[in-house]
Image 1 (cartoon, rainbow, N blue to C red):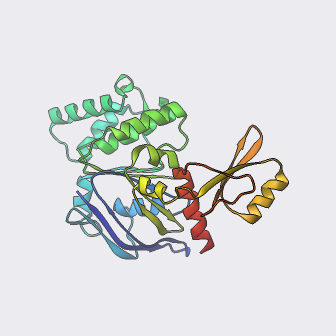
Image 2: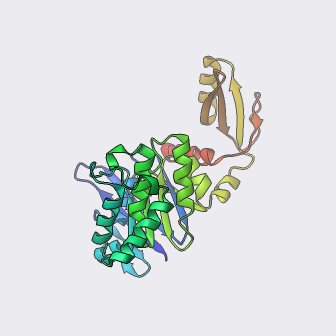
Image 3: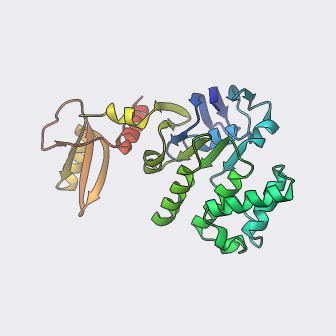
Length: 293
């Protein structure tokens, strides 16, 4: 299964250009799509999920024209949007049964086996008869991926799935995503760098609708080897001086002081020490380059 996106562009009626000539090829793996809020990630996901048409470009899913053969694509698609509604008084069991029928699983025995297996896989079996309104945020996200897994999809799209989850629920959800299997294409759209680092063998970064980087996280990290330097700023004045003199990647508070990370090809001196690059550094360096250009 391969998803090939070629020259995809989309401008909304209000003039916002959400996608600008995006081209990507995604194989049978977990693919991470990183970008800040408003970068165009959701627009790209909605287009792949056949929910909106682009102004130009094409999408091929293993020989299917996604823009023209929408019904065929939907038969093999599982989609968890960033925000989704549920019928509050309906149980997870009944809702999944209903969705399975809508996806064409008409055999009652087959449908029961499928729903029961997914409830167990998503760790919702014990709460299967409870109304969805009683579910916590993490449980609702797990229900969301449960409905996306119905009918054995070949392409699964999850848009900002861990936003707002506490650390324990985030770990449960990431473990669930990683267990889906290698014979499925999974696109994980997020602004949380750690989600991609933990799960995805390949990734892309987009900003303002443009593709900034595509490749393996390990290769992206290697490109910054020996070029990330760190220093703790002793005062706000020193922090401002660093910001005006160097290419600042990020800064973090540690014990009330700002630890500043900068990008430099050579040792900048001035008390900076070399540090291992992180995927967060890759993310911010590419965003900064795009902003400067």
